[in-house]
Length: 141
Image (tube, rainbow, N blue to C red; front, side):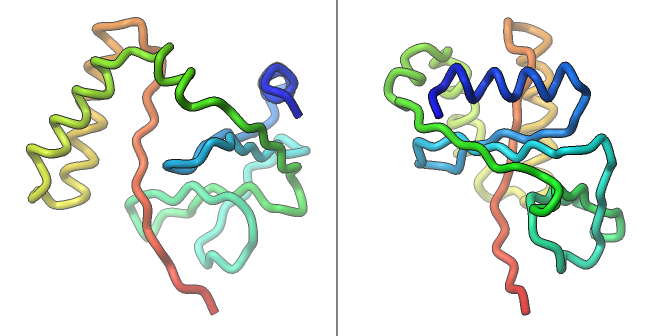
């Protein structure tokens, strides 16, 4: 699959108001996507299902699930060096400096502060969306 086809599939899902997610893992050149086949909202509290999960900070709240059996996986390779040239370098420098300054902060407080700063950057620039994430390893049975 090439880059235009990948984004055309995302756009088609968006126009049909079907759930989808697109992401790139750190230090990888592949953008991956999950395209759900229905408008249903799937959730989980048990994490026994297979699929893509959006988990909230509140462990009592349900997590949004894109089940493997109800979604299609798509992916495309990108040239990260070209992408980085096209992006606003000052945006990334801002977050790198702030992350170094708050290394000792509690993880949740740090994340919430970065979200607040991301909102401020959206309001003061051409950015429309910023996605901040964290990695957590969880052992499964």
